[in-house]
Image 1 (cartoon, helix red, strand yellow):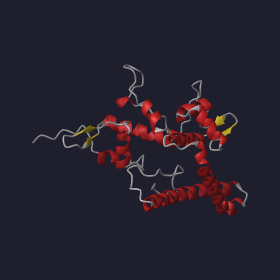
Image 2 (cartoon, helix red, strand yellow; image 1 turned 135 degrees about the horizontal axis):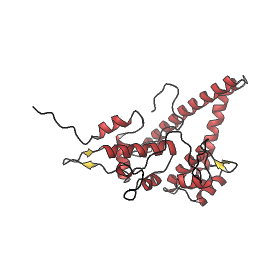
Image 3 (tube, one colour; image 1 turned 120 degrees about the horizontal axis):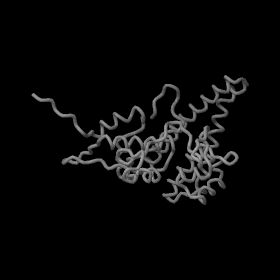
Image 4 (cartoon, helix red, strand yellow; image 1 turned 90 degrees about the horizontal axis):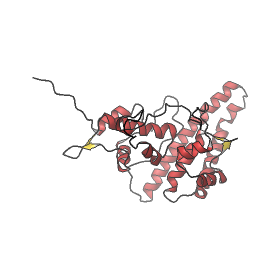
Length: 257
């Protein structure tokens, strides 16, 4: 009896199994959302089930990497996924460009790389897909800060989120309450780690930093759970996307929620 030929496609569950080691937060609803936004177009079986080939999986990997490592809004990712001209160097299956390595700094205007991951204003505008006027408003309300003439990775995360929120009519002035809430949470964390900081030695400061980020990750997880509960109590039906996880990671040895 001859062996069955290997399938050229994967089901959505098999795709999740492939991606979850690298992207623990990926879910069926996340993949369906990306499809609804036009970033992926898996084939369909006669009965309507999604069929993913190797190019689809690679495209998904690129999208998830760009979101996680470069904090790019979906609009910018979609533009970068447009197929390159025929014969263009570096073209990949599915039209996805090669994603930058995890932790790599952004390219500067002259093609060099910022070793510390800082961005110029031009780079921040391009990476976040934000207009100069919108960025100026975020700076005016204290949501984005720069050191000298450069912006940190946190500025890219804030600007990218602000761009997506603007699509729902949320302006920079509306985000002042969010900034104030974040500052209150930082004050709370500072109080918790203050006894460790009083030891005034390098090891204690490093431990305080680790503890502060672990507490931040847990408070953000709690914050998300409380919002989900409040939305349910307010009568909003459950959506298919879900709240994003913390950007801080999880406590040592923990798994992402």
